[in-house]
Image 1 (tube, each protein chain N blue to C red):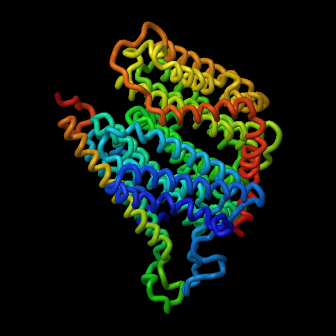
Image 2 (image 1 turned 120 degrees about the vertical axis):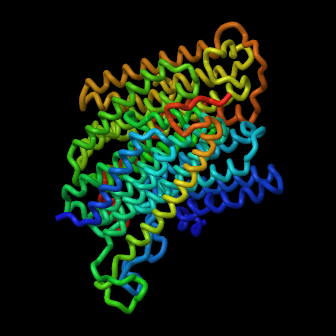
Image 3 (image 1 turned 60 degrees about the vertical axis):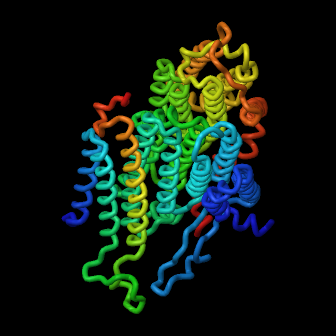
Length: 112
Length: 511
């Protein structure tokens, strides 16, 4: 029986991928990249999840009670990276809109 | 000196990274000081990598731990906080090559981008990109690899958009979207490996994988492999690479080529060192398949182009195909690589060096042609050989080298690939030679279009001396490696191939 959080991660990733492949609006593509990133982050953070565990900041607790700290560190880093990528992509979208006057990848023509 | 050699892997990442953030400050003071600062920080990094390389060639694998020096030193929770930087002959070679290309690019850019705004940010991003590539090549840890991969893709996407034209923004968007989707898939693969082993260190995973190899590893390997093939622009997903190489300024295209070759190195590292002891020949065949596909589609599409840089972009795709062909044959023989498979792998590694020299030379020439005429379309050019004889000589050198004609370096490595792949499967050699001949046809056409014919009538500028100098340096190395390939193979190619085919040495470096 597959856990629900892994299932959710897979659904998010495939949703993002299908939008990135089939949609023609640039903003939707940016959103798709972000959704893929969120799916992967969900997958990572749920790898270290332990039912009833506590946050790994109280070092007095026994090792088995804590959720895994590594995956949380990884997820935090990857969220920051995701943020940087999406911000840069949106700034490209702004410039592309300024040059072409549309966000549709099929209809773009250079403004005279 | 010993201190520097000891901490070289950490410094090689830290120096360009810190220099990147100081550059804009110095740019406020004076452009000259900034340029000197950039070139000196890169030269210093190159020096560090050079002494590190000598050390590694002498003593074998060098492991540098950030954080806990030994695995037994742990945090109170019983958890070792450390990141491993592991250097062997292969990544010493790659990082040295990348830094040399970065230095050449910086010297070329002095004049090339002189008239544009935002030079501070250009150099800053270039240094950041170099730091990312250093990190990618030195790291021995999967997650650090992902982080540096993203550093590289963000900074190179920003550099691709340097000209601020509509097309360059489009190319940069395409590049960033595709490469970040690739990165997330890679992170997914890393997550799978972490879920299975609870580890992120490549060498330790490589050791554990022998005992617990399962279907999950195959899924993780295919995710990592797909993401890396995407990053290096192998054929099914090559369009972003061609677009970004076309629209980026010529020096940035050269650095983008270098980034894709670092991606190739990571593919080798994962294929050979991490999964080398457990995979069967299928992965090698997959690489060979994509290699042949890249050669053919790259060359065939290059024939059709009339934008010079787009044409060069497609030939860069084709050149990556040759490397994949050689390395795929080597990988299919893992874990016992000997005889022809080893020869094929060394040919592939040698071709990495040669490819970056040849393609860089051609891209820099294309940049110079754009600089002097402001035209990119080869149909609008012609007769440049009358005014620029040395540029045409350089183009001939680059064109013969990339098509694998003796006495240039492309011939040396392609011959190694051909004669060893012949024992593997003769058909592949026929396809490879055919691709090489077509490549010559492409470049003869380009040469005739640009340099021959009646003298060029538009306005032209002179090519600045610093730009000519960098191109002659590249041409010198092309000729040197073509005339004395055995020197290069003995000194650094064979040790690099040895390092790849003996994963147990890489594993032993950490444990």
